[in-house]
Image (tube, rainbow, N blue to C red):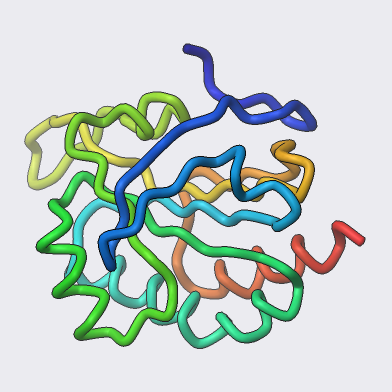
Length: 156
């Protein structure tokens, strides 16, 4: 499956989320959807990114926009992370990397001179019609959530 293409309908997917929820992308039509991929629960950058989306959540909600964070961590890990940080949005567990592969976010990374395959911090904005309207790859956390919110506002 190829990665979503700009201004095209994103292929449907089903996923398990925190709070024992199950989502299907096509059932979210009528709402904008922000999906942000991050490497690991409870790490500094991932925590800050989640907190930024949390702090702007009410503004996203006023823009008819749902937020989902995605990593390969387990639902149990996600539940702890979500509860500790008081995230008002759900996290998607993607241990088999199906969603990561659909959005082409698994990339070669390097840490302390060691190469490995991991999630490249990326965010995707899907409009109420199910079309990909914006994507950000190699995301730098500072100011990113605000940038995404501005892109949502520009959809009108």
